[in-house]
Length: 460
Length: 99
Ligand SMILES: Cc1cc2nc3c(=O)[nH]c(=O)nc-3n(C[C@H](O)[C@H](O)[C@H](O)COP(=O)(O)OP(=O)(O)OC[C@H]3O[C@@H](n4cnc5c(N)ncnc54)[C@H](O)[C@@H]3O)c2cc1C
Image 1 (cartoon, protein in one colour):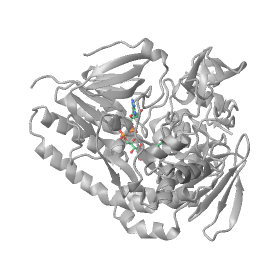
Image 2 (cartoon, protein in one colour):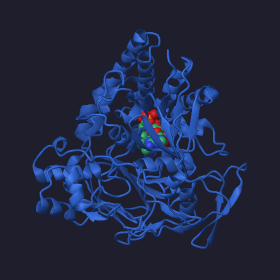
Image 3 (cartoon, each protein chain N blue to C red):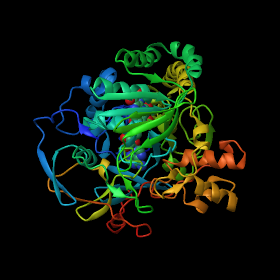
Image 4 (tube, rainbow over the protein chains, first blue to last red):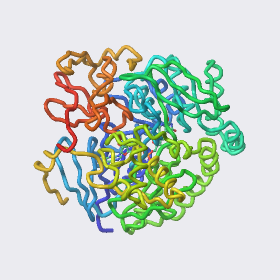
C-alpha cells in the first residue's frame, strides 16, 4: 500500500473516531480543528486549568465525554493533531490553513470533512439586541465558560436543544422565565410513539420535559415569537400563545434556535454535489452509503454530512475511515461496515421522530415583518429583501444575494441563509428546494489579510 | 445580563485586560467574549452598516458579531480568543468597504 496523506477536518466525535480507526490501521492522519481544544461541539473541553468534574460538565453524557477525551489523548503521536487551525479553502488536492496567524498549504490524497454544525435561526424583531443568543451559544457559555447568559432567561424555538439547554440552565440554578416551543402540542403527541420506540435515548429526551415540570418551569406549545424587547440590552420577550393572544414576559437574556444546520462550506468549495434533505429541511452534501462524496477522495461524516447527533457522528466517522481504508487498498472492511450499518439503522427511527417533534417552522421565516433585520452582517431588513426581489426578479438565492447584499457579509449567509431562502421561495411561489443554495466563497471564514503576506508553501 | 456561575478555579491565574481603556479582571483560560460579557460589557461593536449596537450571538465562531480589535489588530473573534494578560481591546471600528 503506498503511503497516502489523509487529512481530517474537525476533531468532534466524528473526526476523532475516524482518526482512531485510521491510526489503528497504521495511517497517521493530520487532524485540523479551528478550536483551541478537541471534543467538537458537544464534548468541547473546558479551558486548560478549569477543574470541573465530568459529571458537572457533561451530566448524562459524562462517561461518553470522558471516554472520547481519553481515547483522543491516547492517540498521542499516532496522529498529527493541529488545534487552532482554520481550514479556509480547498483547491484541487490542497487545503489552505491558517494557524497562529500563519498561512500554510497542505496537500492531501484523501480528505474527510467532519466539520459539524451550527445553530439554525429565523430572524425575529429585536434579535440583534445584545443579550439575544442562539441556544447553542447559551449552552457554550454554560458548559465551556461556566457562565450564564442572564439571570432570568427565556428559551424559545423548535429544537431538541430547547428543553435540554433550558434544563441545563435550571439545573445550574438560573431562573428560567419560560420555555416557548413554536411547535403545536399535537405535533409533539404525533411524534411520541417514535420517540418511545427510540429506547433510552428517546426516554432521556422525555425526561427533560418531566424534570422541567418538576422544577415548576412551564413548557409552552405552539407559540409565535413577536419580539425581544429592549434597546441596548434585552428586558423582555413578547409572544403570541397558541390561541393567538399576546403576552410579554420579563427577562434579561433570550436564547433561541430551530435545530442545527450542517457546516458544509468547504465541501461546497471542493465541488461536492448537494441534495435537499426534506426531513431536516436543509441542503446536505450527497454521499454514498459509506460517506464518499461525489468528488473522488473526499469523504464526509458526522453532523456536517447530516444532522443526527453525537452517537451517529461517531459511527459515521468510523464508517468513513473504513471507506478510506478500503479505497487505499487496505484489508476488506465489509464485515465492520455492515455492523455499523446495523447500528445506524437502529438510530434512524428516533431521528425521524425528533425531526417531527421539532420541525423547522418555515412559516415564521416567510412571515418575518418587513421592518425586521434579516441579514445581521449587512443590516438588510426583510422588506428591503422583498423589494429587491420584486424589482429585480432574481430566480435563485445567489442572484437575490447579489441584488440585496443578504448573505454577502462575513458569515456568508450561515445565519440568515435559511430564512432568506424561504422568503425568496415564497415570492417565487416555489418550494424552497427550488430556490437554489447559497454558494460558498473562500475564505469560508474571514481571515486577516496579513496572513497571506506570511503565507508559506508546504507541499508535504 | 451575562454572569459567571462559579468562583473560578483556584488554580487559574488571574489576568488583567483593558477594554476601551477600562481595566477588567479576567481568569486565565476563559474566552475574551466571556470575560467582557461577565464584566458587564454587552456591546462589542456597532454594526458597520447601521451603527446599531451589537454583541456576541452564537459564541461558537460562526456569526462574527463579537468582533473586536485586539492589540491593534481589528476583526478578531472574541468568542474564539483565549484571554491573555495585558490584552488591550477596543470595539471593532471596521467601516463597511474598508476590509
Ligand atoms: C451549538 C450546538 C450545541 C449542541 N449541543 C448538543 C447537546 O447538548 N447534546 C447533544 O446530544 N448534541 C448536541 N449537539 C449536536 C452534537 O454537537 C453533534 O451531534 C456532534 O457534536 C456532532 O459531532 P461532529 O463530530 O459531527 O461535529 P462537531 O462536534 O460539531 O465537531 C466539528 C468540529 O469541526 C471544526 N471545524 C468546522 N469547520 C472547520 C474549519 N473550516 N476549519 C477547522 N475546523 C473546523 C469545529 O471547530 C468542530 O470542533 C449540538 C450541536 C450544536 C451545533
